[in-house]
Length: 190
Image 1 (cartoon, rainbow, N blue to C red):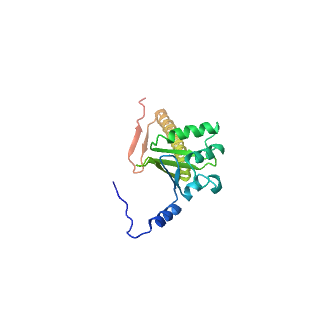
Image 2: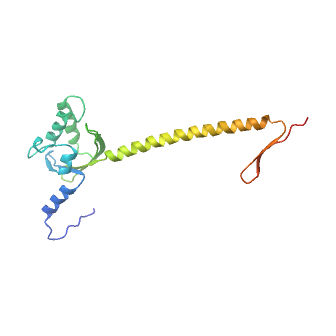
Image 3: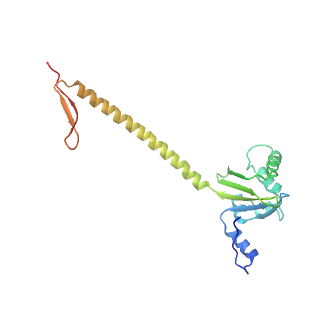
């Protein structure tokens, strides 16, 4: 297993606090009893948890219930939504999925079980990336459509030209830019 490096004599508590407050990703650490052990400022911001909404010692159930009551999980009975999510959480299985919040923010949520029976979850705002990916898909579709249209136009032009060449009785030739004959039709014998 890869080990961390922390300089001897460093104040680990201060270092951890600094790390948690400066990360752009949200982090939650949940223990085996589904108590919230850590919830950094970025997680509060990304999940839109007001300071007064979750109390001093929140549980995972508190967080889920708060989200369910404000409609984050869509329509349905909030208590049923809480029950389903707690049931899933108690399995302590790794997970990696995306969730669209009511405000349109797209969060990537990656959870990893810990050796002591809890789990760590990382929340990343991927809205910008997903928006750019969608824009690229749309541009690609437009370009493919334009390419198909242009290919069709060129084929139609080629067919018209070939028909014209075949209709000429006296003979005709077509040369490329270097003057080489690339297509010719001899005159029909009388």
